[in-house]
Image (tube, rainbow, N blue to C red; front, side, top):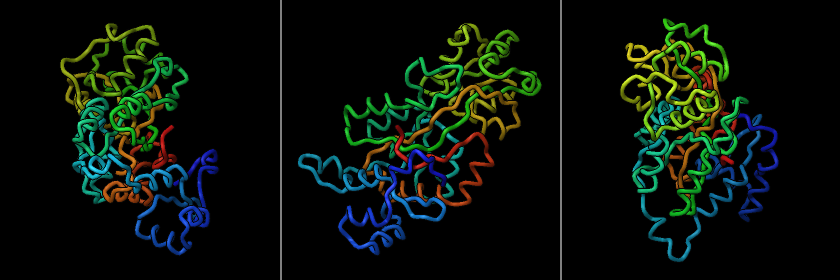
Length: 315
């Protein structure tokens, strides 16, 4: 996994971690072999994200008044927004976590009620972020983290991927001829394309509504197909089944179903979970699998994914 240059100052060596923990370096290598400590490899060198090491230490600290809360086990369920790469990895990694995807906000509420182990989310922050610059990574999901931390302070966001979002359009509707950028929305509205909408709890719906406002169209300027698609896959299938001609979704799903795709934005998909559960065996099994060649090949094959920050704390 490639780590951007700006992250190198936040990475510790084996010797530095050993000094921090006051153990021999051999013990650190043993923990790595057991997947018992957060780590990554860059050009064959073993490195340790400082923030995750600090979270790992905190997760093993007993605090007065919190023992009962820390001891409660969450069910092995992944909630939140649908992501094809995550859905595939849950099965292939053998981590034992099953999917229950029904939108970012649904995942947040289920997480707050203790119904899921973690929640996948891709919810834009400030409305001003929906700029035609199309880079919406900064500030993503932070307001949801702050909301959840009011009840459970010891929470973190771990980056899963940066994804390309845009218009999925039926080739029969002239999708290959649609202009790029926000002009694509104007052109689709002018052509009267029938759109499939996502449910209110979906980050895709929030982002599309903001982009429509930025394009000067608004949600009322679009022709909507009845009902709402609850996953990216359901949105694509509604186009193939003739229920709609267009939908807002990620590039990976558009490519999978042979739909034309016009990119409109980049977004960050994060996992919300407790600092303690980052180091639970199911999550560590999942994250260990993301460091394999098979996972990298799958992400590249799906398309539209940047996994260079996967496993790092989201800022």
